[in-house]
Length: 476
Image 1 (tube, rainbow, N blue to C red):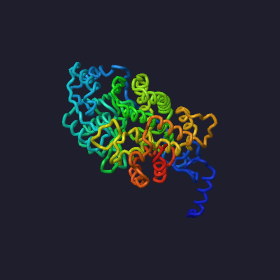
Image 2 (tube, rainbow, N blue to C red; image 1 turned 120 degrees about the horizontal axis):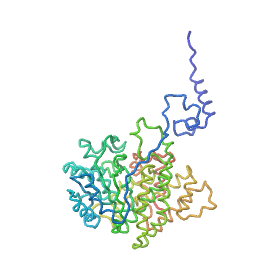
Image 3 (tube, rainbow, N blue to C red; image 1 turned 180 degrees about the vertical axis):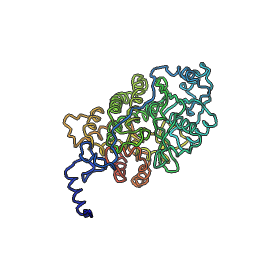
Image 4 (cartoon, one colour; image 1 turned 30 degrees about the horizontal axis):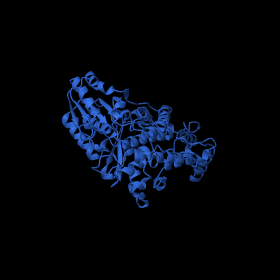
């Protein structure tokens, strides 16, 4: 008996009727996802439909907090029975007390080591490769990073590519700029000793660098990269120049805001086929929310004090903790458009040199490049979660008593502009030499940042990024 085959028109009508009876994103005309909503009656009907993300993970380094805790690092490495330690630092920190304290601790514990002093502030693919080559040649059994995020990230990369001795640099770099290979075996012990209060790199599995051939910043993101231990010793941040204190503090601020406003983890897309493939940046979730929202409150109070008074030790100590709290938050929740835009802004910088930073190459500090688009980004993302945006505005000092939810973006954008201007942050990306004619090149540099752009709570493409950049040319 022959079977009747429905016509294309009848199938189309049927699909339209199904869509009209269900409001989940997979069936609505305005939907941007093909994953069925949790209450959708058709969710279980098709074995072909990928299961939407249903789980999130909490991963962070062990942290030890306390003034003078750095002196214990020699015993830590002796306890690990390390016999060949490689210590990473930059040329400036190499002359300062934090490195001296580490070296003295290693000497006391009779742990053999070498010091690599050539870390580049705001690392590049070339500086990463030089560090990797040095580590492969030395053959360490443990790593120590003494410095800011640049040093810690460089040590992470050296650790990864020492264990995977035959790997090419791009093998583990985030797709599409790299191959996005997963780290499927343990790395060597890494102890991070941060000397800035900003990146939170002592708590995360990310390593960021400037890929010169593409004119963009990118990185490696895998939980396996996170340090075994982060020693958060506020004594190590005392020597920070004021502009370094400002830039690193702004990074904490944006880590907290972005992870708190990222797309919810269960809306990120389909669940991975293997938990090893679940990204470190998962989207906002109940655990990252706690750390990020608390970090935000700490920064809002402590950063203006730390900038206004170099002798405010309490504010400095609060910022060291805030950096770690935000690191735990964004290390699991992720960041989105502020960081995504920053990678193009700093990556294409050819002449801007920020005060208090090394002068051998053009440099727009990471925290500064992130913060300058924050007002425009907030205005763009607010419609997806106006309550959270108003909450952030309130924390930053705005009166939201009579604010309407539809005005959340304007309210937070203005609050951020006041906050940044009060700290003396450069007035938008025009301050770095960019103009309207550069927007196209910047957009082209930013679009490949899939790892962070996909965590935006609103769908984002070239047009939206261009608009954010245009509105960020001048903030005040």
